[in-house]
Every structure is written in structure tokens, then in C-alpha cells.
Image 1 (cartoon, one colour):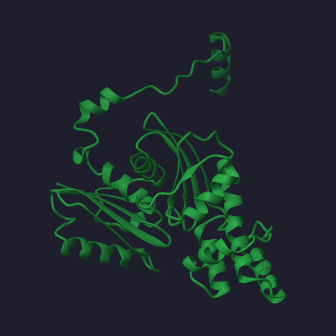
Image 2 (cartoon, helix red, strand yellow):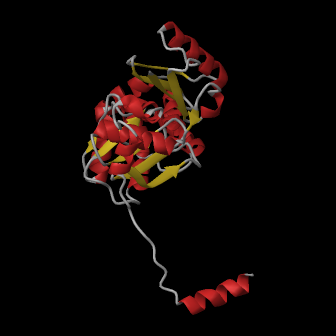
Image 3 (cartoon, rainbow, N blue to C red):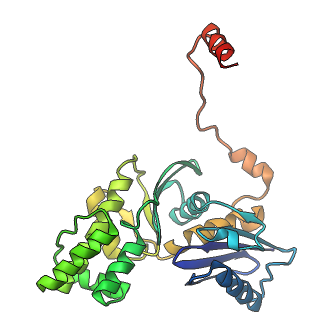
Length: 288
């Protein structure tokens, strides 16, 4: 059996295969999630994984998950990132995912999602913000980080990507060092991600996922802002696809069967009303 997880992100699409075949790869999503999905299908087939076969189970997640028309199941990013992040962290953790179009903070406790926050209203504080600023500076993302390490951060105060870009243009016009502008751009994202994360009680283990997860510079700056160590994770950009692959079937090694799931099930919380039964009946009668 093969268990395939496909994460169609806004910028990059990630694929993880577990089971008889063990493989993973990433490719740009491009302008059409549908075209990207077809490329993935052919690439898997060439590697000996037929997504239409009975022995292959596919779970799709991410921004363009509905484009994966051969998926057996479509599951939200929160659930898949939580499952994949827990696997990478080897236990319960806080997952900070800086994606192309949003940033997520997910709390995993007792193996399940207990809470999460998401910034999906503005590209500031996401990978898209860095991409726009790198383009404005005429450099690649890797070069942006390399320059930032050599610079001294200058403030980019705007909460809006459009206005922040105007600040960067002003700095360029003033002749400010490209290294300092790069450091300011990255620090701006670090601050926004930290502000989102600090709205929750963070676990002892914190991992970074998404396209920036391998960056020791970004995790070091984020760690300093949070006052807690954030682990860089080389495989972090595959967290969603990895979680989807594990959720694609029970036989991938985490659970043996449904009985093992039942044995590991735990009740997280219960709710008991403090309202008197007579008051409850009165309210209910009024609603009717």
C-alpha cells in the first residue's frame, strides 16, 4: 500500500509518500493548481505510484486541495499540519507555520489540535511579504536572508504590505544599505509572527514549519522575540503533506488498527451547565 499526502500551497506544492514507497518532492504551484496537480500525478506514476490504484490512498490539503480530483479525502491544513508537525517534533508541541499567504499557530496536546490562530487577512507577516520585498530589492529570498545576517535592522512599521513596500522604496531612495533594509524586512515578519504566537500559551516544544522552516537566522530572531527556543526544521515545509500522508491510512505505522486508536483516545474536557433546570426550561419555552 502507498499513502500519499499532497499539500497544494499558494506558492509551492509538496508531496510525501509513505508505505511501500518512500519519497517526497516539492514544485512551484504556479498559476494553476489544476495543472500542478496533473504534473504531480504524472511524476508519481513515473516513480511507480499510481494514484488511481486500489492500493494507493491519497489525502489532499492546502490552499488548492480541491484541485486534487483523484484524492480519496480532502482535509484542512490545520489538521494535516498538526499531524505532520507532531511527527516532526516527536510529540506534543506548538507549530508555527509561516506559509505563502497565511501564518498559523497550532497547539497540539495529547496528539490532537487543542487550539489554533491564523492570520489570513493580510500578506504582511507571511512568505508573500518577503517575496514582494525581495523582488523590490532585486534579489532572491536566499539572498535576502544572506544580506540580513550582515545588516542592522531598520524599522518597517507599516502593518500593510503595500505601505511597507513604500517604506522600502523610500529607504532605497535615501541610499540606505541593502543589508539593513533586508534585516528590517525580515524583522518586520518576525515581529508580526511573534505577536500572533504570543496570543496563546506556547508549549515547551515549538517548531517552525513552512518555507522558512530551515532558516536558522529566522528561527533565531523569532526565538529572541518569543523568549523561547523555536526549532528550525529542515523537513518543515513538508509538514502538511506529511500529515496528509499519515492521515491517508491507518497502516502507515502510527496506528495499527482502529482498536489502537480507541485505546489511545483521551477525553480532553467536559462541560456541565451551572444553570438550574427550571431556568433552562423557561428559556427553552421562550425560544419555542
